[in-house]
Length: 152
Image: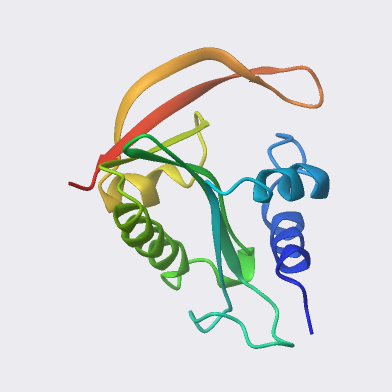
């Protein structure tokens, strides 16, 4: 049986370009999952929850706050992109967040991240920018964009 944490880490390793240093390490994910307000969901390439010995093609990790849910990470492996998995993960996130009492979703991402189109098409709108917020492993400073999506 494949552990969900192993699945998340495999997707993360395949999905995030190391040039930006955006991937979390195993300890960071483990620590986040220890809190009761952190949630995740994984999907296989066919768009459902993976069976015991099936690998994941995508996941999200989120954190619930007072009437808001923050998307911490979302990733789909490159060979499964363009098949609607990212949108399906966002739908699961929105549904779960609503059940947990959230009225809006928040996310922050690196300016220029190609996932911006997915988020905008899903209904996220920019609400802020942080200049030189992220630092790459090479020391370059990158701006961050904050997005929100009202879910009622």
